[in-house]
Every structure is written in structure tokens, then in C-alpha cells.
Length: 379
Image (cartoon, rainbow, N blue to C red; front, side, top):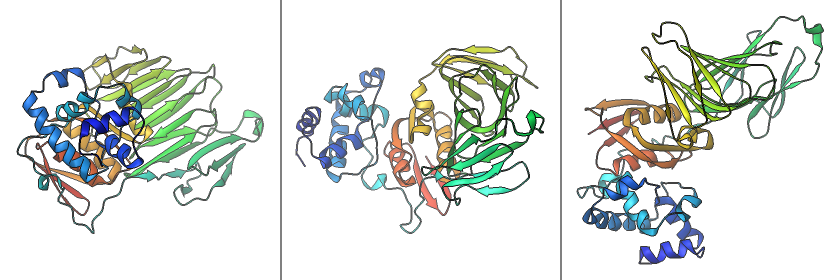
């Protein structure tokens, strides 16, 4: 590997890097907002440059970044950006960056895992099911694709003359699981870890309604029948659109984020402010027990989980650890006050948990120990 990081970055920009050099650069580059760059002093940048380059030489593949982000940035932002988002304090040493995790206690990331509960009570492990047709229901064939999706196919449009009783199926993911399902109307739903979706095997003529717990990303088929997603405390009405709903019970707010089209968020129940909100692309509604508010957000970071990444942009530390706990199926124990701690950065969800924890330890703000499925956090 080259001795000068500037030359390596120039070589990367020119497309002349070897695979090893390219992996090293892409492993450590972080996208950073200009405010963070401007707030970094020269001395801190110099210290960070030395530490980043030491890591490059060690070639630790812990961060993932989309290449086009790098190509749009100056080489200086690479060095300064690392310090701004994951700032390495002068006291941080290479030894401090190693998460205290026994070698024989490797915690691997989540994968495609889910259970399908049919209307008649039968429960099928989609993780263990072979590809192909899993089961037939009234007028429907339920198939598992080779890449791990569940697809409903209508095989008899006029079964029972439309007089059959509406039946409901439920697909649920455990901690450490995710799954994609194509509903009978063609709507695609991605379920994050520890989530469930209850839906009819055949939608009614005047409404398409499903019930979500946890987190799901929806690409609703464009049919002239309203599509409604019900969660605890709200309903979301759409026709054809792309949106994400985060409704975990251990989160303070129910968050609905719109990427394409339009949706209406309608609070109900005990919420004091029950006025509905119409979202535009790039907006997110945040509903809690007392209020619902709408703000513009970075949608890329919201749906990064669906694309196989963790993306944090000044996120609250406990919120980040909730995501880590669900994806790696671990319990997090806090030793200290972490209320005002925030992190930013990118990392693939395919990495072992030690890679994720190492990144946060590199800031010098937290320290982790791992014992079985328990992660203890120290200041």
C-alpha cells in the first residue's frame, strides 16, 4: 500500500486503485456535512489523519460507503470528515478501539428470517421452507422465491363467487430477522427485525387494509382502491406510493416517512391532537401521546435498513443501540448517562456486531463489553 494517503486518494479518484487499495479507501471514508468540517481545527485534523492512515495500513474493513459520494468530495473532506463525524480524541489508542468480546462469542448480523401464520392457525417457518410453492389458500398460491421473498399469486380470481369469508395471514420477523413479502394486490412490503404484518388473503372491493407492528417499508401497488396501514395510534392512507413506518413500542414516536407520492397520517385513540397530516415526499410525521408534527428529513438514512446499511446522521445513541439490539438480537445494558450522546456514520448491516461497536468506540465517548447476548455500555 502507498505511504502517502493523499496520493492514494488521488489514485482512487482517477480509478487506478487496486482492489485492495479501493477497499481500504472505501472502508474508511465517511460522508460529512459542511458544518462539521468547518468546526474542526487543524490540529485535530492532523491527529485524525495520522490515526486514519494507521487504520488504512491495517486495512480494517469496517465502514462501507457508496462510491459516488466519495467522487463528489475533495480529498481533504475524507480526512477532516472522519474526525467530524466519528471524532477520534487524542487519548484514543489502538488498544481502546478493540471491543471487549471473547473470540469464541461472535455475534453475527441478522438475515432473512420470518414465520408465516395462516388463517387456519398453521405456522410456517419461512427460514426453513424450500423455494417454490409453500401452500395454497382459497384462490391463492403462496410461493417462496429463491432469493427469500414471499409472493402471493391469484390462481382463481372468482373463487366462491367473491362470497368467501375474509381470512387473515400474519408474517412476523424475530429479532435478528427481516423479510420481504409481495401482497395479493402486488404491493411490496419489507419488514425490519422484530416486526409483523397482518393482512387479508384477499382485499375488499373498497379498501386495502393491513396492520403493522415494528417497522416496514411499503411500495404500494397503484390501484384505485385506498391502501391503509394501521399501527398503534394512527392510520396511514395512500393510493400508490413509497413510504416507511417505524412503530416500535420502545421508541418515543411513531414515525412515518414519505419517499414518493402522498400519504395522510390520521392519529386516533388517546392522542390529544388528532388532526391528520398530509405528507409530501421528503417529509416525516412524528406522533407521540401529546402531539403530531411534520418535518423534512433525509430519507436515505431512514430506509438504509432496507438497503442493507446502518446510516446515522447525528442520531441519538440510545436510538442507535435499539436498532443494533433488534438486528443482532442482543440485550443492551447502560452504565452511565448517555442522554446527550449522538453519532453519525455509515456501516453495512452485514458486518459482525464487533465492527459496529468498534466504530462507536473509536470516538472515545463509549466503551462496550460483550458477554453472551448482552452488550454493556460504559462512558
